[in-house]
Amino acid sequence: MSLETQIGLMTVPQEFARLCTALLVAEHGDDFLPIDDDQPDAGNDGYLPAEKRMVAMHCFKRVQNQGLDNLIRRKMVGDLGKAIALKRADAWEIDAWTFISNYPVSERLASELVAIGNDAGIRVSWVGPAELALTLQSHPNVHARFPQLQVNDISARLGAIQDGVVGLARDLKPAPIDLSGIPRTPEQQASLIAARPACWEYLLFAGALVQGEEALEFDFLDHKLRIAPEREALDFHTTLGTIRSTFSRASGFVEPIDRAFTRDAQEHAFGRLGEHGDVLAIQHLARIVIDTYGSFLQAAEQLRSIDPPQLLRQALSLALQFLDAPLASIRDFISRTVEEVDRLPEHLERGEPVTVEIALVLDVDQEVLRQYRAEMERIERKIRWRKWSGLDPDRR
Image 1 (cartoon, one colour):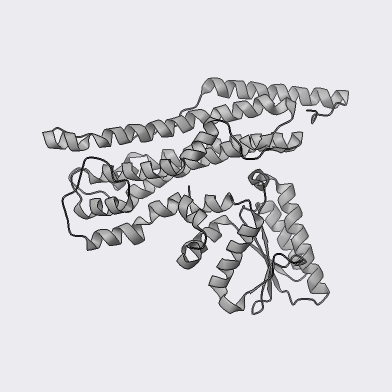
Image 2: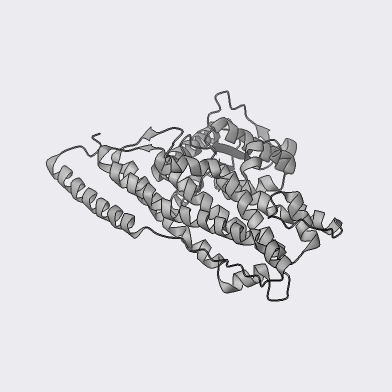
């Protein structure tokens, strides 16, 4: 799972504020004035005197709320309103205002905030999880203070080949490599890259897949057992919107896989016949697989955290079942790839031809999809009937 995704999953406001403050201090030093988060701050979470910029920080306590524009708007407009009030009261000199969150801001809401800020003479900007991830990666000393991100940041670990493993490999002298299995640690990967024995590209790819899958195993078990650490009772329309948006997002997870597994992309990663592959391209291909796997698990967690009204329970259950097939496809792909690669040393020792099929197609359970669509049509009919009869769709 990418570092951006990990930041997006933060649900403790104090911890998120601590991360933002650490990054702002790392970027601006003493020029940034942090405001004590435990005291009333009137919407001011930090201030940059040189830029006359006020900062507001926010993360939701529920991940699913990140998809609700009305809640995001309420928070952003409210905090900007506080900044405008402070400016008009001459409490702070404010020429600019930045909203830092661990979720993205829609274009519609962004344009509205800019217009409100312009009317008050304040330049409005915002920073999301993508920008926070990039800044965090450029400050290792800050990264070390947040081990929960470091442990779970699969993309960063897979991408660390550029700064760590490649550097080690450059300094290592080729040595006999134990080809009894795939490399499961950075040290084993470094030795593999240094020596580059026959078919090292496939060994490296399988090792990256295994490490990524293992890091997300608890998340998969939660999905398999339909466990949610905490469930929230949402109203009918919020629940329906969340189910639809999550289902739609999950359908879009397929595109990166389709792009990554073209013939040209694989040839670039694993090399043409008689040529070495590309280390970073191999790691990138593995990262796409693991990030897609993590995205499906995140979507499933978002659905499991909802306690739905009675009318939407079947739709929620079917949406969760829909995620089972693509998750199984990725797990089967990893298992099949590891099994084939694990047999490579034996084939090489016998002088047998070696072939490894690298093909991933995400399955869709057509019957579950049919049932989901039929259930959504039934819900639409129920909504129309309840509106006509005056019944509350939120009835549980």
